Length: 113
Length: 112
Image 1 (tube, each protein chain N blue to C red):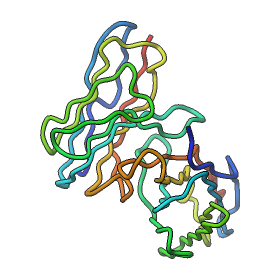
Image 2: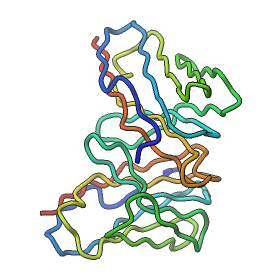
Image 3: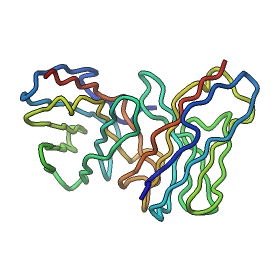
């Protein structure tokens, strides 16, 4: 049981480049989330998916897109990376709503130059 | 916007001492959760307390919730070096039932 996995672990991008962060969970959870963590800011929700086929904006969605490919996978895409998107990105999942226990992946460290 | 705010921002104690950290929030909640994050790792869920509960225990952890004061505390008893981590509270009640908002965390250092 791997839990929540994320790829890649590290990535360096140049301004304007695009990339997709991958997330998968093997717990048959309905809900999945993407957060970013910046120093002194805690975690901020980018997008979430309450069920397969649905996605909704969180607190800081600008500059990102998401796809809930199936129940297991939830990807986050940066179409044109900016230095302000330098951060650590975490994917999480929960069986029910976001009010319940969330299980986090190990994170992706992204540096945009 | 932050719903939960932890206090203190940083805490340094000796091994064996108790550590207490607090979380204050602004709007009514259904659940409040505490998570731990070891350096460079993802968050790990510690405990969930519902709005109709006042106290909850899990091993060396004790969480209290005072809805009248909109605050919660996390007590770690007999701390160990392995408890060194950042601790976050997460609250719902803002933006619908699907989401929680995390605070900025308390960084705990336990000195062996």
